Image (cartoon, rainbow, N blue to C red; front, side):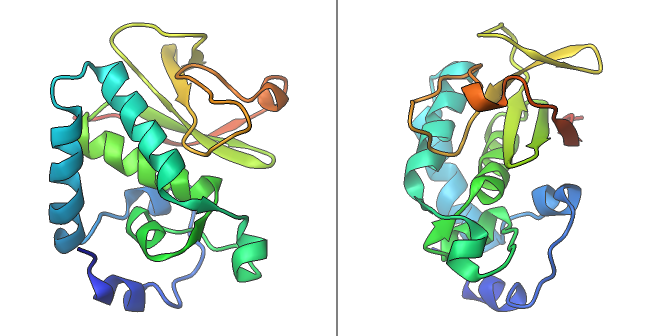
Length: 174
């Protein structure tokens, strides 16, 4: 169940920085109808299996379209807003996936901004693939946006491998 008031609140919400976008919580109504179901779905899975499940869920739950094509302008959606709209892009899916991993697994994460793409990297107890090192600690890319090739945890889009990125938000659980 979605809290319809949320859509009204965000109707004229300005584009915010990534720290603000990724920090917006779900309403209690939406949280209670979504998070317990996903917690049950990943129960018994290890960290990597559970995060992989959430990554694939996020890839397949929404239709992809750029903000310019879908809305005529940049529109960064919060995790909850993503549930209200027919289309979402890499920023929206990254915010949604980030929220799910934070709430269900409480794992450290970084948000990576490339010139034309946003994605998330997660820190696991056990290594998988080639890490991105941030502040001396390893993180593995978990691509929540569907691509032509099904990317596994730790795999980066080939077109991004030689591009510079910026860590625009970092999350460390207490």
